[in-house]
Length: 152
Image 1 (cartoon, rainbow, N blue to C red):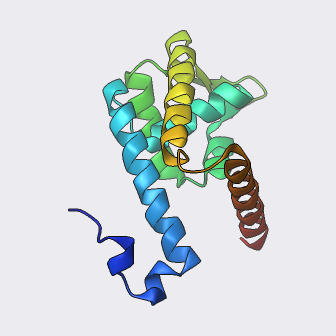
Image 2: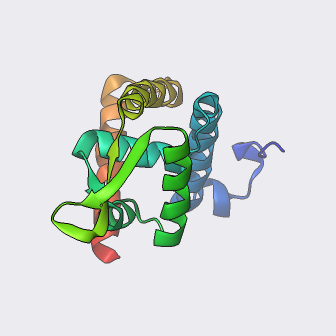
């Protein structure tokens, strides 16, 4: 199913920032999803792998809170990542009731590939913007996302 051309939509949608952000977000996610499907992954898997690559091993609770993933859903995602041999769960040495999740060597290699895919998708999304426009857009979106985080 294709989306209607933006110019064919009523102004209540085509000029609405929220609608535009959602529309562009869905487009970006579709592009990214197609590329990472080759690794047997979906975007939530990539979020976990990239977070662990950046921060090192984390507890399941920390991953859920950081990425705003329901804990029950996170367990299923981690099961899938473990089956792909990308992550390893182990009892947390400081609190045996908690599990620490870290990347395997294959997970670290996959994180490198995922970062490149993300850069390639971003380049395609921003190809119509100058470097200054892309930097301004990124900074503005980061500011809005931080403001939204404070409101949650």
